[in-house]
Length: 132
Image 1 (cartoon, rainbow, N blue to C red):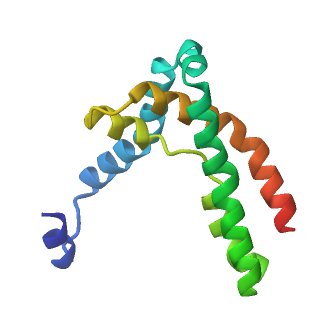
Image 2 (image 1 turned 90 degrees about the horizontal axis):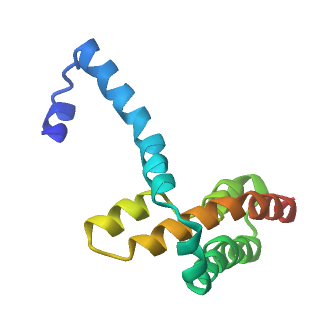
């Protein structure tokens, strides 16, 4: 329905547009609230090795691989910096929602998102410093 609406180039009523903008702005805070409510540091301790492993892959190895490939390709820093930031970003909050909907390991998802988000402040600084 959205594709047809978009192709018809019809204007959305102002009220509906405002409501959808408000609802879309609430998506990330609600996801973070749900994850925060689910967080237990006992879960983090129980799953510490997989959480550390996921953090190393997501916050260190992925940006390192991207950084090396960009440098070897001769791409200028301003051109690859946005991609490097995306590669160094913590695990997305949607991981928890998807894990819950697909009967996955929600406890691991919560622990990984929480720890990766906490550690990403340090790794962002590191990657920005390295990129120059």
